[in-house]
Amino acid sequence: MLIRVQELSKSFRKLEVLKNVSVSFDANQCVAIIGPNGSGKTTFIKSVLGMVIPDSGEIIVSDKNIKNNFHYREAIGYMPQIGRYPENTTMGQLFNMIKDIRKHNGVSLDEELIESFHLPSLYNKRMRTLSGGTRQKVSAALSFLFNPEILILDEPTAGLDPLSAEILKDKIQQERKKNKLILITSHIMNDLDELSSHVMYMLEGNLMFFKTMEELKAETGEERLGKAMAKLMKQQTN
Amino acid sequence: MKLVKYIFFDLVRSRFVFFYFLLLLLFTGTFILLQDDVSKVQLSLLNIIILVVPLVSVIFATIHWYNSAEFIEVLLAQPVSRKRIFISEFVALSLAVGGAFILATGIPLLIFYPDLVSLLLMIGGFFLTIIFIALAFWSAVFTRDKAKGIGLSLVLWLYFSLIYDGLVLMLMFNFSDYPIDKIVVVLLSLNPVDVSRVMVLMKMEMSAMLGYSGAVFTDFLGSKVGMIYSIGLLIIWSIVPFFWALRKFSKKDL
Image (tube, rainbow over all chains, first blue to last red; front, side, top):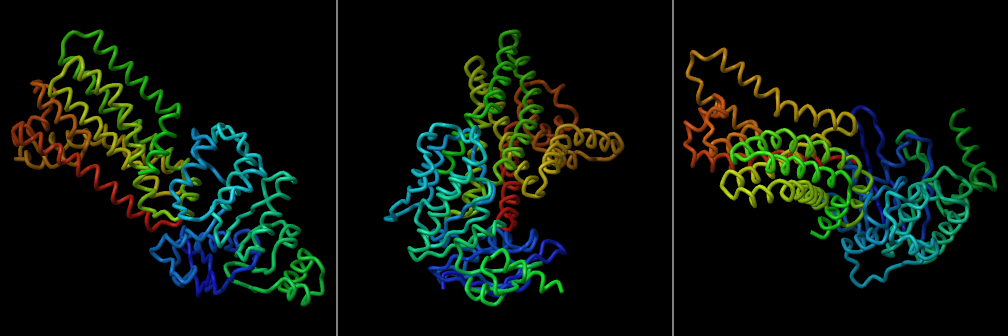
């Protein structure tokens, strides 16, 4: 198991954001994390990244307990929902900086996205002057750069133009074939339908289910993920 | 240290640090050029330094911290410890803002008037920079809301620069019949702005400017011990808020 989460709970003041969530992910999975706003998806991801410190429960990444540990993040590439970078630093310097602080001993760098997004032509532009979409491309390129075993992508295609979104989706599919684990949150069901092998559905801090895409579609008798999810949500409210 | 380098170069290229540098240079230049008397120049600069340096440091550092929030998340997703990120941000800011101060005020002053008072002015100003950056980090870590954080920073500045002296004065006024000298020394030690002011004034032979509390302070400790004591206090004042903020940051949900 690449990631094992056991009985994870987290509250912000009185609000319970995660309630006893237990789930395991393995290599060669692409997991769609689905749930309405405020269902705890981001808190779940941030717990795995060590940004949110759980009240109780354990998170094991590649057999290492992540508590008071930061080395485990060598195995993770993270693409945030909103990427903001030092304003007066140029894009080229930013890439150098991250390469510099993330010791990548022997790991070959994966600069494919940098090339396919045509980022080198913008290397001497300051980050302040770049559009939101371009910064999003930078975030994507950075998350794939170190060839990590685990990719965590928070709304990856949200701010991208259709062409760039396709490039990114192709890249995600290609990485999955390399036996990697990919976690994606998104509200765009069509994207998730194409990419994912598993669905993790969260609601009000609870893990409602974790199933393969085939199981889910078979159970609901629907061909498309969006329809299947809609059907399930309707059943639950009844 | 690599992280410090990158954050520092980003800060140095910001307009804010550049304007701060120009502003200080303008003050220093005009005082040096328009006044002939050494102690008058130093006194005018002292008054500017203890007001402007803490204000700029605390506000700039707070805004910088909130603006870096998303980037700090990106850094945290790398195999880098929280402690390292926090220390790097602190050191880079201190070097950039404190460096602007030393280049614009400290060095010109030392070139024109190379004496102990100028050196103490430079040391005092640099310490005030560090201390108020640490206080800024403390308030920024304390609250998630940017407006609240900046408000808290401003309140801290107001408190140490203006309100505190008023409170001490009121206390001395009301209890002047009692032996409160030691209490006054303690109270003065609890305010880094006062400590740096008295530290410089002690060496300036301007006892009139020391005020009652400063006079008591000098009298009580003597100027040599007083100076070592002041520097010690300034070091403590830089360390305590810094570590308090670091501890909070290490346990914080981002």
